[in-house]
Length: 349
Image (cartoon, rainbow, N blue to C red; front, side, top):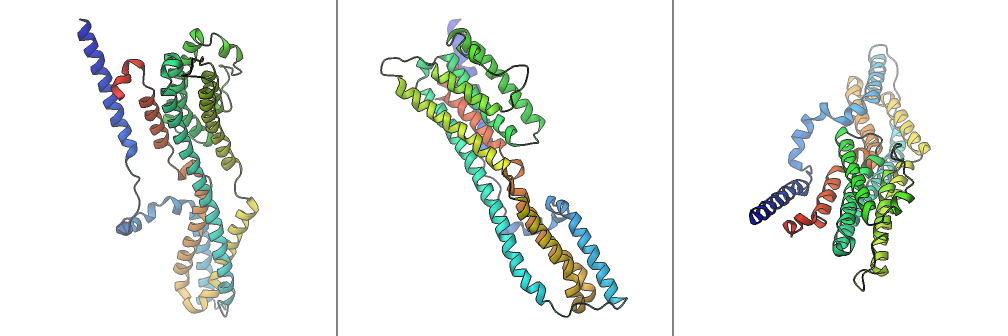
């Protein structure tokens, strides 16, 4: 009977490891990137383009204004401007302004991706490093550290986004519940009230900064690991605490991107410059293009305001530009593999 029970436990652990590997493989798939062969699909999707919906207000307004100018010239005899020299001179300045605006937004996108890559690396490093001292930490601390590392990216995702989905909110709440259970289990035996007495978090009022709360729990948990001869000493403790401190720095780096947007005067001046340039463009084109002025102005407006909108969309990389959920899931599964429950530890080797 004992052998049968052990075999059943091993089979269940192996099945859990297989399912974990299958789930993790979903997030190892390379991201889809556009190619030159997608040009026809891209053209067909233009009417459903999200960017087109976001710029439809200036696009329709300027196109309608160009129609009024064209009608006044072709039907009512209103004279047009004699040359395009003014728009030609200002076009170079407008191009540079749009390039600088888009580059500054793309730099913020790159920095945001680097921050989340650091979160991924640090969570993996902490989990793998703590696994080396599994016997010294004990099963309760291992559970608390594993759950904290799994909950941290989901808490960060919600922290840096003003809007989040119900799925992410429910997933984070489930992980926070597990973290609370692990903390209670640890308090009962290992730190015996040190955490409970020193906790500054009120369970009845949600904290304003959940990622920082998780960092605090991690620091207290690692600090409470007892020394054991030359295996785990203050040297190893400071090493682990240093990695947790580096993880806490990513919170401030994300908050800096979210709370420090591109200066409003710069963004507004760019928008006003593009608007005035496109609004006056029909007066310069109508003399030579006549009724063709309307579609030409519409295409130019779509192109310029589209570039401007791209800069606006990637300026805050954590809302729409960077897909954070696959990174969170990768951290979740990596920590589960590095710090599995003791009964399943052999199944992940």
